Image (cartoon, one colour):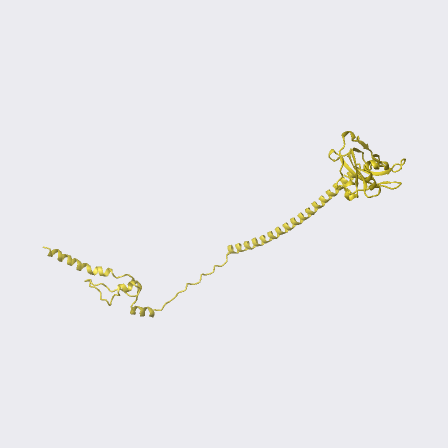
Amino acid sequence: MFREPVKLLALLVLATAPVTLSTQVPPSSSAAHPSSTPAPRSATNTRPSPQSEPDSSAVQNGATTPDQSSQASATPQIIVNPPPAPQREWDWRDRVAWGSGVVLAILGYIGIMLGLRTLKSIDRHLLASGATSQAALESASAALSLAEAIANSERPWIVVTVEPFLTMENSFKVMASNRGRSPARIVTSLDQTKIAVDETHLPATPEFDKKDPVDEHEPIVLLPGEATGIWAFNREDLPAICKSSEVLKKVERWHETLFLYGRIVYLDLNAPPEKQEHETFWCCRYIHGEKSSALVMAGPPAYNKHT
């Protein structure tokens, strides 16, 4: 019952066997040897002999048979180099482009040189303008100094001097005179006495005792060339100033010295309000003698200054 299908199945297997074997041959065998032609298949689909076809496993692994290697070594290898590319001749477009490039390079160089020359010229002008500005500043400073000198020459100057009384012996008067060219108004006049060994023992700056308002002098206006007395001193006033016999003896024996100093504040009537006030400091030293005495200008610079 089952024999007929089994025979049919066996015939089908035998019929399909050659086709399956032929499809297992790799195509690389024919590609490796393009000169050789494959063997024609028989009509009966018989299996080819092992001598006519190479082993499929050997072809797939890249191995060659001895016949193939000898054939490959005998075949000469020819290397064909491509011919060089022909050089294109310059046409008018290339020459115009080259000429324009040269012209642009020359123009660029000329422009750079002109720019450098312009920068140097600007630098010289800046230096010249700086020198001119410096000269103008110096001229302005000189003009300002000249104007200040002219203004100072026209302002009042209060100078203090010591003069003896002509009618009284050993008597002296301290005079404040206007040596300037404009009137001055004396606002305050302070005076002080100090007994010290010498000038170096005086205070660094003049010190004055405070006075009551009733003791302040009335303002005095001095025209150019006028003078006024601000202190009168007599030898007979020495004991009252020394206040003790011991100090008097020291002064008479020159162990100590009597100093008289003061300050005068006056105004320049022709100047603006912020520049009107000026000061004059003065200092005198008393020299005691047996019969006659003297009062002379002395003292450190802080006691003899003008503003």
